[in-house]
Length: 150
Image 1: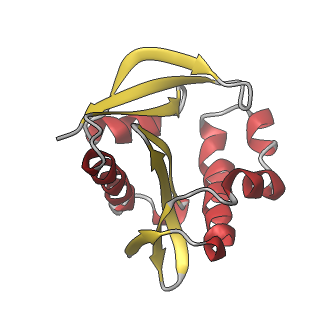
Image 2: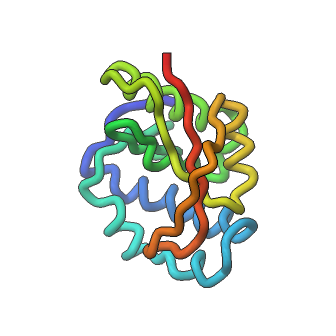
């Protein structure tokens, strides 16, 4: 599995991974109305032109992360590729890049009811800081997690 910056040619693979997560993993943690509202067209709009780092295997995108400033904005690993350390590698790459840019405290947001992801982030050293939000786009509570970067 190779990590590299995404190119415009990766948008189809990114959308495939993103939708697989929404439609295979999120039904266990998010309301059906939210999961079913995530269409391929909407996903393409969310990801077209967004800088990301992708993990590819044999030319297929299997995971991705997007980060900037002091925030990890997104981390997705195709459900078929979960459990093998790819998420930790992508998150580590984001943390390293943020730290190299001078960030000392990093942030990310996760849906409050997404207990599997919260558990994953905790194992990577992230912790809730007590801040919550509800974005109009999704309408579901999110928790902010933080991590001190070396």
